[in-house]
Length: 611
Image 1 (cartoon, rainbow, N blue to C red):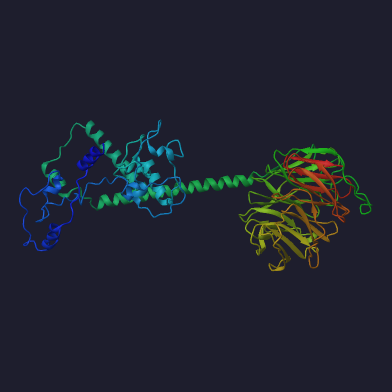
Image 2: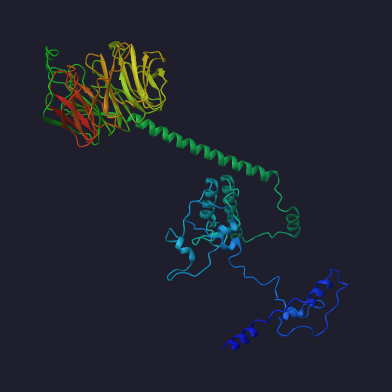
């Protein structure tokens, strides 16, 4: 068995020959000179050598040594060796840690597909129709492709996998590849000219068909027309210019007519300002007007102590939308004025039948704020239609209307009885604008705020004014002088969109947007009263007007859940909460003569009386 194995090994692997003298002679005969090399004798190759090895030139004396054959340039399969082919990246990856080429990023995937898949890319799909990626594209390029596709039926192909298809064509219209959106469009004059020429040519053809004696064009006329190539003489050019001038004049006339029509609509809008009286008679049997109070005011108003209301006793309904603000008739409070978001102002009877007495329909949009004059015979209203209207309360006529083309958020009347024509409005243009209602002109502008002015409050008998703004600042001004006397601004402050003075004009409270009511002095140095803060309600985002009781003992406010909150002025403690409205409770007023009566309004369109 061993001999057989040895014979098998001999057949597989030839025994190596010892390096004898022949090997030394081989090294001695080796030279770099091609001329010294001698060709090996024919037939010196050993049996069993590779064909490529036999084809080589064998040096002299090397016939006995059989070396293994090596191919210096074999055929190698490059699949997987090329970095462009072997590079693979997941389209869902957010980061690439290498710097691949564009070819590597856009090469197609190659390999076996799973059962049920049509391509390898389906494993990276994040949409039913393929893989959607965010692409940064300039607005100009997007508008260009969008308008080209919708006007001419083709656009550049945004997909990367559709090789060889640079453009996409619409299936609803024939694509016009020879046109772009940058082609010069025909002007109105050229379009009108083309239509006119087509009409003239059609009319000339009809006349030629109807005319029997048609004079054919002679050969000389044809030759002249061909020679000049459609030359237009001066008369033709003049006719074209006249036609363009006429078209332009018609266009200008049409625009003027449209402007006059718009002005007429505006004039009609201003002229349609009316009011509706809902009572039976505007005067009683003694000739007294309906706005006069028939009851005598009580004499011991200042001695009465106010008590918190407990129950809901009446509701005024009439506004079709929310009620933004309510005001008592000055001094007597026998009438109640309300500003609604249905663009109407209504005045209600409080003492007798409690019905709506008159509706003032002068605004086109929601009414933002209202304010009576000192005697109540007139009142002002500001609206989101950017108009300020000066009304006669008794007749319902508009005395004057003025605007600065800006939205007014509040209106305040000067407390001096001799200056009831002076008002200051907080505007959206970061200014508090002082108006003279008699001349309907702007007298002064207070323009130090960096945001829309929300409220304007007169203090110290009209000598100073306080403004609050969306810039979270409170400014104190000298009346008539647009220079800030005191800046109230702290990093922790919030916007204060509603401010109310106490009955004695010593303090003012403001509805802060961090769900609390803050207090300042209303005279002197206007100090911040840090201890007098009233919390518990939720008012962020709404300009809810707070209120005082007539004796100054209670502070009240609505909130965005429709609740009515009552706090003690001295202890800052919450004593009572009433569910007043279904929507936001926007404003609340304490009756000046009846000690426990409170009126509230909300965005549910109701005005409620509590006792």
